[in-house]
Image (cartoon, rainbow, N blue to C red):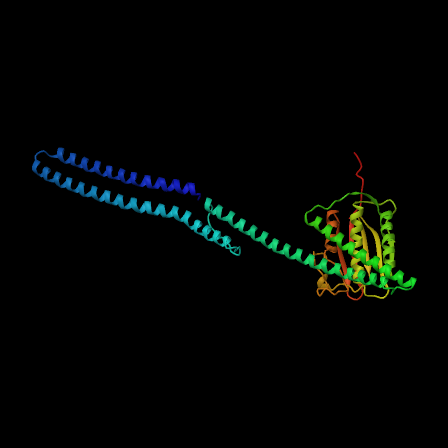
Length: 381
């Protein structure tokens, strides 16, 4: 019952009960007087007897009146106490719970539950307060997790920038000291420096892009892309990079020439580059091979990127697209990576209306799959 109704009911009871008792008293008086009049008129011969009976009736009326007033007073007190206690409990009990809850929040404790029963205003207030506490707890947990992730990101980026910078410094010192005394050595040193600076550039780009993801400010420019032309260009560009690392690229396109997709070409290149970088990072074979296959699967274009690297353990496979997840927990210095590359891949593809997943066998290699929806013109009626 709502508090307003409780107060109205209590007020009515406090007013109505005394009125009923007063009406009962008046009724008793009227009945007594009627009996007295009947006694007077019934027999005038017995006048003395009537006088005596009248006196006795008067005494009885006074006693009845006292009893009625006393009963009315007692009932009124108990009614007022009962109604007051009923209203007080509906107000005081939730207020005590609210006070205890606010004290907990003041002390920074959000690990409690504010239970309340009923459907009045105070019960609604307690439920709203409980919802506020729950959201505050979720917000605090998200903030702790975000702070932890940001610290982990800074640690990862710092570690992964330090490795190529140290390598670049070493090779530059070698050139300055004349260690690269042949054209072959000089060419190898320069290529290594170039690759290491590319790694640093990629890490910085990842960090910049991650900040845009975190604030939902990814700059997309969607356009119609010819599948054959676009992925052929991507494969040619990737092939040059892989050649410098001694990795063979095998590209195959099984899509017809006129098939189009709606996508942001720059961001899909980022997707492919991140997947390829991940494959290079965990390549453990002397003869590395990366295959890119583009297939038509109905309403979607499916791209498969397969490597013959070390593979991914089945326990890690479900988490590789989570932010900051790394399979090399020990952070082996030979493996770079900020732990956000594949999470960026998933975010971009989800924003394109596609998806990404992977299959892997340890010691054999990994296949990354992602799909993009085809562009289809809707005929005008």
